Length: 348
Image (cartoon, rainbow, N blue to C red; front, side, top):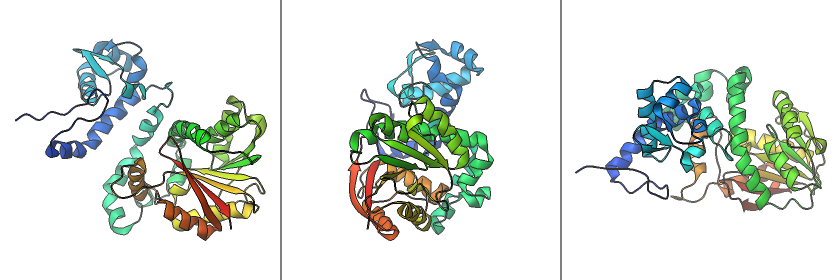
C-alpha cells in the first residue's frame, strides 16, 4: 500500500497514517531548513508571477537542479506551487516569506536559522534532565549578552521581533481599551513597534520607550518613521537595575517576562512596581498557556525557552503568582486575535 501526504485545499495537512505522521515529525528539521533556505534566497520575492527554475536559479546564483529539489519539497506542503513542471508560483503560505508582505515572517525564519541555535538543540537533554537552559552551557555567555557581542545576529533577532510584533501590536490595540491612561511606558520596547501602534491608535496618549541604550538608538529612528516621535521619548537603561520613568499611568512589557525564570522575572516586575503609583496599570503581553491537550503556539515556545534562554511561557495562575510576589494583583486577562493575551496587573 502506498502512503501519501499533502496539503488539502484549505491548507490543512490531510489525514495520514500514524507512521507517516511520526515520520513527518522526525523530519521537522529537514522541512524547516528548506523553508529557511527559500527565505534566505528570497524566492518568494521573485514570484510576482510564476517563474521557471532556470530564472530563479540565475537570480539567486543557485544550482538549478538543487533549487528544483528544494522547491519541489516545499510545494508538497503548500509552500509554493509547481503550476507546471519546473515552474513555480506563490501560495498563501509562501506569501508570508515575501519581504514586503503584511505580516511577513521572513525575518522570523531567518532568525530561527541562525547558526547559534544548532548546538543548543544538541544539548536539549541537559535541559530536560536539569531544568537549566543550554545557551550559556554551549556559548559561554547568556543569550542577550551574546547578541550584544554579535551585532549582525543581534540585528537579525531585532528584525524578527519587529516583524512578529507587528501582528501582535495590531491585535493588542484592537483588544485593549487604553482609556484612562495618558502616559504609557513600553519597558523593553525594542524598536518601538508596539508603542508606535498604541500611540497611532490613541492620539491622546504620550509614551516613553525604555530599552538598552544600543537598542533605544534604533527605536528613535523607527518612532520618527511612524510619525509618533513627538509624543514618545526614548530612555536607555537596564530594566533589572535602572530606575524606570516614574509615576506614569501604564507600564507595558511585551514578550519580556517569558524570557526569564521566576527570580529574574520577579525582579523586573518589582522594578516596575517601584516606578508606579497606586493607580497605575501593568500590562504584560504574553502567550498564556491553556489547559492539557489544547493546542497553542505558546507550548512550542515554552520548550524553546526551556532549552534556549531559561525562561518559560506560563499559565494564568503562574502569572498571578508572579504578580503577587512582585506587589501586584492579577486584574484580568484579555485575549487578542494573536497568540498573545494582555495580562493586566494592579498594585496591591
